[in-house]
Length: 370
Image 1 (cartoon, one colour):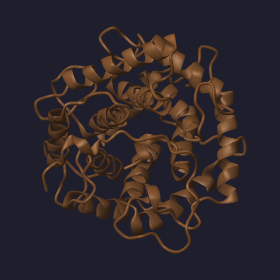
Image 2 (cartoon, helix red, strand yellow):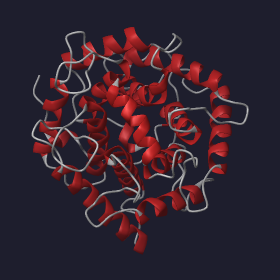
Image 3 (cartoon, one colour):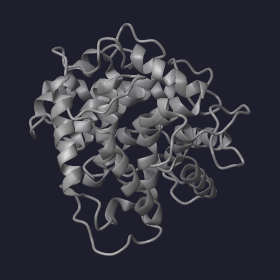
Image 4 (cartoon, one colour):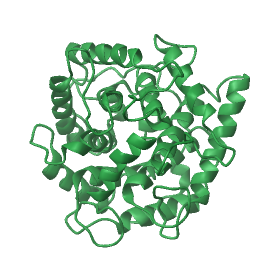
């Protein structure tokens, strides 16, 4: 679990053949939460247009409302999110803003429009000329860069280019530079690691960059097919015979958090039906089904952030089994003040991740669409 342990430290500091890239088709904004349909989910289909009959409950709505209100209260005066002991970072700021966006909030629209706008300004202030999205004190910044580039891609896509404003020009320029940095720092194996240099790689950092590239491509930014093909090759090379994923290409054990990330990596590269995904999902369900004791609790939110996405994109029985279980678990763990505790990277981080997970059924974010 070395890589995932490093992720917690990084949060603190910043804190079958692949299909053509045409599968990265631009996606429009979901106008509203999809109304549940009666009966069981249709097998073999993503949950995007195939919702469960009871996905959204009054208890879920109430928990989300409390969580969003609590998270909004934690925003720092400079627009960032992140507790002092963990640092104010582009990563946690971006995840918090994505949590608000998952409820339909955007700059100029929604109850939390101001929080998203201030968070966006914070990230743009830390966009370097070389494309790196990071604060000056960030160490091992590619985790944060991936989350921040994802945030910029979602904002750009959901606002149809950001509107004709000076900020939209800054947003576009920062997003393009961020994407080019990702492309230029991919290593020979096809992955990425902690720093923006093309040397070694690991699955944890690689999934962050793949999601950022997918979001940017959805928003109309050019992403070379060769970059995605190489990333897919890298992820495939990290899968173990048990279906789980190891941290790097060299030999190592499987672990469910990075296995969820490995499955999501392939799905966001446009691969939805594949033996590697089937084996990975079997491992994930056997190792991390919500409701069971978790020996890797330090990586709880990281793992479930990717696991719920993997189950959602797989759809069918997998979504029908996973969603009620993780929903129940997170509703039970919410504190009376509306927050979720995370001792590895801070409560802002834990709350942001929990809210992103719980708002999957709202289907607002383009990144979660197939």
